[in-house]
Image (cartoon, rainbow, N blue to C red; front, side):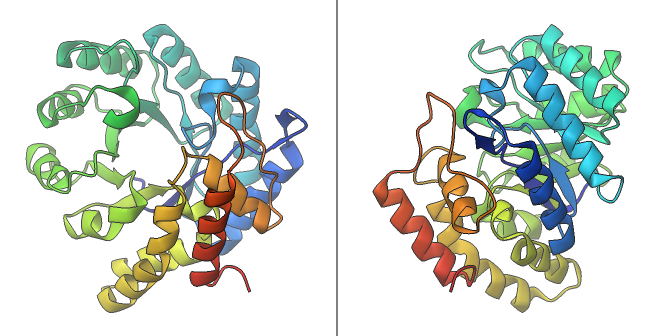
Length: 292
């Protein structure tokens, strides 16, 4: 259902408010550069510090700008099950093609709690759901067994975004669930290894600043042009690394500012990129051929 180069969009700010014009301009550029799908209001979109009204507006702006040309997988996660149901319901009603729902953070639910959380959402909202498993941010790690239970019991749970960096995970997930389940990487630095282990694509931070290169890498891989995909990935690797020297999306917003696509503004408790980050991001973007 979802595959290829999928961008985890930033939410650009100007003077403390969502920069709606810049946001839709970025989306137009992403589509023109070959991005296969869009993810608004995920981690990279600073969803924790958006108000509910802002969250819904950003989803609506993304769907409006995409205009059906590529799928929109709207971030709809929360550590409150009721809130996640409401966000996923809004995504469906707004016209999103899917919902990305992160494992509940801070609560530290058990595997039974994770199962019950996602089953409640799936039972109440008829929208394709991608489970976002990111233990470094949410502390809990959904097991392959729990993922398989959910895939079996909930037909609208169609895939996962895996940010564990465990490259055995796609192999064990595919063995447990089968070919129809979408397996998307959440780690740019290991994306080719993930694809080699039968992954379907990547929800990418790097694609914010290098959409064409990321799309070409996925296209080359899908076409069996392995050497070409490896060469692109090697060129992008310093950028994959530089974009995480401070918490995401601080570095990538600085990168977008170098391309005149957005300001460096982030919301507290995040702060704009420090000098060390700026130097690393700039050097990596030059190395990747994104800046003269």
